[in-house]
Image (cartoon, rainbow, N blue to C red):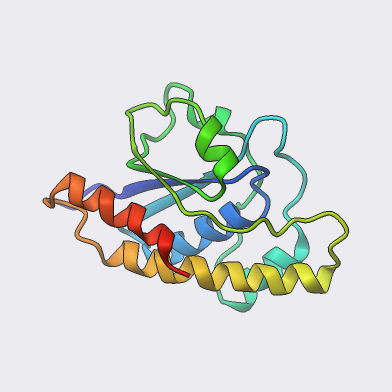
Length: 166
């Protein structure tokens, strides 16, 4: 019998760049073993994912179908997938996020904001690419961790320690 997939939720303020990059990348790297989702803070989400962010994913051969900005309210309702891990990509969301159903393990993988006021398309593309590479290194290690049958406290510690990778 196949083991159930590991559900991971990435949280950033607006859910239009960093968390979208993490969701798409983990869904590619962990296909069949992980199922990634992303969300942002209510009132900060919405709007289309900027084209330079999608271009970076497409250039890296990462699927973009179905990616869209969503609020964390979608993941606190009954009937939503139970998360195993919630990874915040900025301190604001780590301090303010709700109690997640099922009490998943949480971690903060601080990542600089890339949707900055006044940023042009070229700068956004460069920053998105740098963020994708940084996240990808962490996600490759996450995928390599033994998820089933291992010491849960050690696993939680390993995932939290990945925050300190450049």
